[in-house]
Image 1 (cartoon, helix red, strand yellow):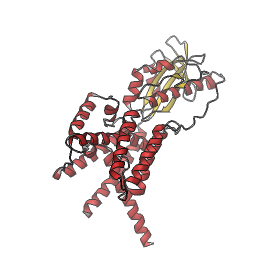
Image 2: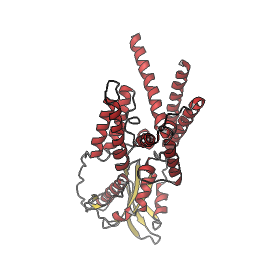
Image 3: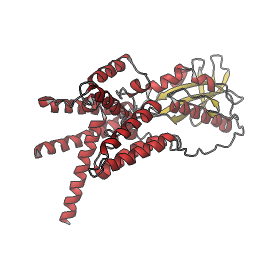
Image 4: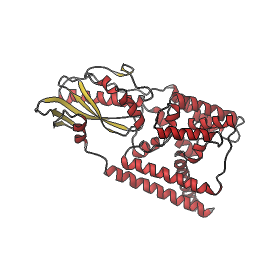
Length: 390
């Protein structure tokens, strides 16, 4: 047993080292061929002449000026979006394209397929507009919609002010807005933290209460569960603005805070919406815990290697959502590939006979939290031994 624990600790350290190396390599090879992408996406541009930092005057094939472009980024749900904003001499947006995206692909595709960019093209630098005020967000892709809109507006006003010399409206610093999603999330953490203790009398009732709340609110209503892409986003340092992503900070902060204090997973066991969906199915059909016997370690390490590879690829490509394989959105918003729908169908059927098959055998969050637990124990043991010898 001791040797097994030592091996797990060494492998956890090796995994962290691999992740650090992947991060460094990914940063070195991040795509910087931006100008050629702009010409490809806006083919009428024949020539670009830099006029200021990340801003260019653009010309057509007859050497006629078309206006100006600038590059602006903003944070979506899964990562940053780099937008090219084309502005005419009157300070009006006449073209808008996504140059580079680290956003969750399904959300961005939903926005682009809905022709959301057409709602922004034609806006002038002195117009006041925002999501819900002159522009409607795309359903189930609000963060992506807001990111595109913010980047377009900032780029438009930058060109108008710094290049064209217009007086632009003063930017209003957004305030942090606390919605019902954040309030419910904090309540779920509080209930889960206190109710998981052995001294709590109504543990079973509390757990079912938090699970059903997580299923309905976090899953079906807000569709904001904890995913591997969120963890990758954290590793890549893609920190979204607090005013528009308070939920993101509360979810990740709450999970790691409780883990650090008590080494307990407050999310998966108590209010993970996908876990709750499996529990509900299993409760109806009488699903049971199934032992995997001699295959237990094989399955465990296969999943750990798969998740490590998923994280490494995401870091190498500098894209947090590119290898996120969860089927949460497929269940809660009915969006996803044919493969994701097939996997979801298998998980639903398996949930009728096996308790939480996804959580036990496929979920990428398990290996992440296992490594966190191993490193936490290592740090605590080192600190205690040093304190004892002092």
